[in-house]
Each structure stands twice: as C-alpha cells, then as structure tokens.
Length: 177
Image 1: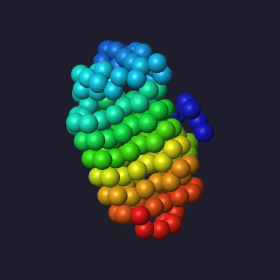
Image 2: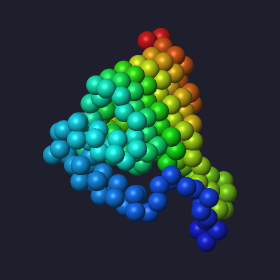
Image 3: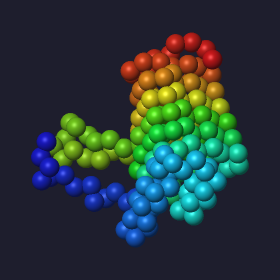
Image 4: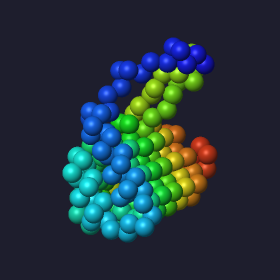
C-alpha cells in the first residue's frame, strides 16, 4: 500500500467543515454519551442536522452516527445501545426495524487491491421490519429486504432476502423467519 498515492479528494460528505465540526461535538456530547437516555433530545438534534426521522423512534444511549444528513429513519424504529451508523453514504431504515446493541451499519471501505487504497462507499437500505442482531455488521451496498433478520454477531456482505434469517461470517441463509 502506497499512502503517498492515497487521494480520495473526490469524496464529498455533503456538508462543510463547520457543520461537520459542530456535528462531531454534538454527537460526542449527546448521542455517544451513555448518561443521556433522552430519545427526544437526540431525535431533535439529528433533525436539526438534516436527518429524516419518523414517529415512535427510540434511540438508546451511546449510539454513534457519522453524518445525520445522510440518514433516513422510518416509524417505530428501535436503535440499541452502542449502535454505530458509519454513514459516509446514505442509510435508509424502514418502519418497525430494530438495530440491536452494538450493531454496525458500515457504508465505507477501501480497495485493498489497489496501491492507492481507494475509498469505496455504497448506500445501505433496511426495508420494513428488519432486525439486525446484537454485534452484527451490515457492509456497504447491502439491502436487507422486508422482514429479514441478521442474527447476533453476523456479517452481511450480500443482500438479505425478504422473510429470511441469516447467520455467520459471512452471513448465510439459515431458514425462513
């Protein structure tokens, strides 16, 4: 890997330096703070910074969201403790979804096959009634179709079919939900 060749200046996070800096501090003080149990304060802050959030959303303590302006959350969504939404690209979460404790939605990676270690970003979509188990990871570009489940500690590197349960690393189809 030649870091002197590394140049991802093409990437635009969708906000200027001042907005990103303000968000960094708000995220650290309010969302990541394990002593703040207030969903309503977190939701208000996310909306101020451009997130689209439905009704009945619960945000537990110690969550981390990279860029709220690249986040859409539907109605009656539950996001557990220590969930990390590392959204360099758009993340869309449908209605009645659950992201269990420690889950990670990861929209970015790097091309390790290139000397330039180019940044790769892809959207993530969780359709309605998706459940992402504790300590699971959804990788860039994955679509979790309606009613799919990613079991505890699993890693989704490919799309999850509707109404199916996936488990493992990489996540494999186990059975119908």
